[in-house]
Length: 227
Image 1 (cartoon, helix red, strand yellow):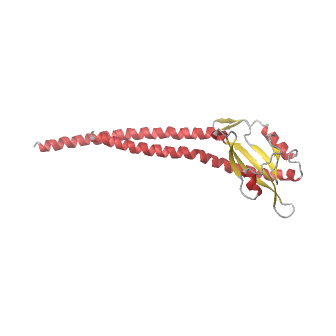
Image 2: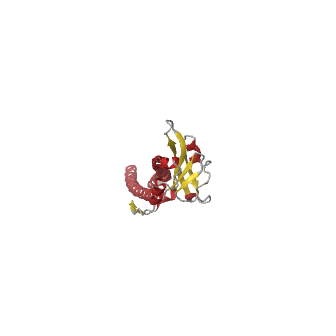
């Protein structure tokens, strides 16, 4: 095998390995990075809504008071938002509230009122003064059906001391951010192939130039040997 071809092959293998490794790391980091950002946003939302739901929960009107009315109006609103090329028409967030025992007393989806959520990680931990969150599949057989749940305590400070009287949880399907993740991954892969192709072209030129110089040196050495 000619030395120029050997150099080109070695160069290409090194560049290909580096590009594949780097691309794989970037692609794998996109999904957790986006989900971490979404969790941070859900934490803020849950704590904001928990303060707004406190008065209705304490008065026993959490399912019929101003908070419930506002949430139901929000779920019916046509957003008409354009987010980086993707259209968002409806709220993709579910909100539910439990009392101090973990019993659901309000559910924006309207399906689980009266259910015992005290064993779910978001409610269980929050009622004990810890950070409560979980990620659960809506379909046990579908990995893409995971829903992120982030909770915040509803605290009563009227008696002079802080007392957790309930939990408000904000839930959002990870599928809602899947298009953004897919587009980012596709962009990374595209530019990875561009980088690989560019490196290949540079390697060809470098190998050709080196091979040409080596052939000239070989001819010179042969001429010197022949006198």
